[in-house]
Image (cartoon, rainbow, N blue to C red; front, side, top):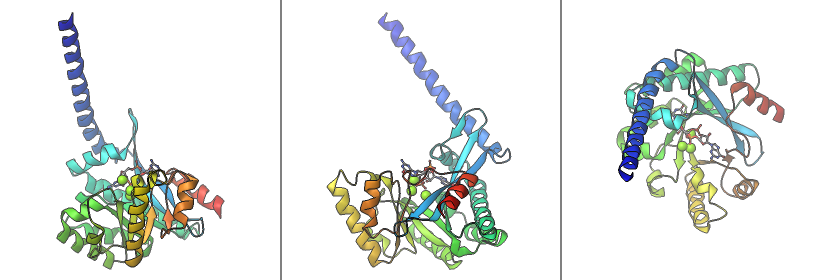
Length: 278
Ligand code: C2E
Ligand code: MG
Ligand code: MG
Ligand code: MG
């Protein structure tokens, strides 16, 4: 009986492995079609000013509605896009769409806020990335000061010299640069000093243990001090409670983003939320 059970377990195990593998291959194949079939779209999450309590920015977050599997998380399909090189096409599409949407809202007099777009390390290393950003700005006619590109901390630290050079070129276009998920990696505060960046986005893990864990308060305090000295703008991510918000309002933290204010929303709902607030 034990032998039979063992067999069963083994069989289930392989079946699972096969399913997992074929899901990945299937997603990979489907992702090639996703753009063409208009299964990709963008959600916008508000970024709120701690001074005015008003929406002062937004982050563009990519979504994939798979025809059979439903909504798939970017955490799952962005790595596939990176491995296959599809990220270049998809990333350009996100940037173009977010810039065009922003420009349209500005033109119609709806809003005048910055849009933040995530850039994959793979995109950043592509030789024509600067040109590509420049072309999209021209095409969309979005003034560069309304665009911020988010790059994760680890991206910058990995291949520092080349990345710094590219970031400088992007900033010269008038676009600002944010370090995303800060506090999640290994870089020292000191390493930030020489980087061409404008904004620090503090990772939600640092924020979420905040009021339970005195250690994080000390770490965050050091981050705020340094950001102030370096004249960086600070955005805290993953704000879910009033308590967290009240705490951050009294720190060197100009902006907050999180479910307390809103989930990421489709364009229509984002505009409704924004307009309702005015
Ligand atoms: P991210 O850039 O750090 O984006 C913030 C993530 O935190 C989003 O997850 C957002 O929905 C989530 N979030 C916001 N507020 C809260 C909160 O209060 N609590 C919690 N628990 N989560 C919150 P999402 O949309 O699933 O995206 C995950 C990651 O996928 C992003 O992290 C980003 O690294 C990547 N990503 C999304 N869109 C793109 C894109 O267009 N290009 C690239 N390269 N990466 C993208
Ligand atoms: Mg981001
Ligand atoms: Mg983040
Ligand atoms: Mg993240």
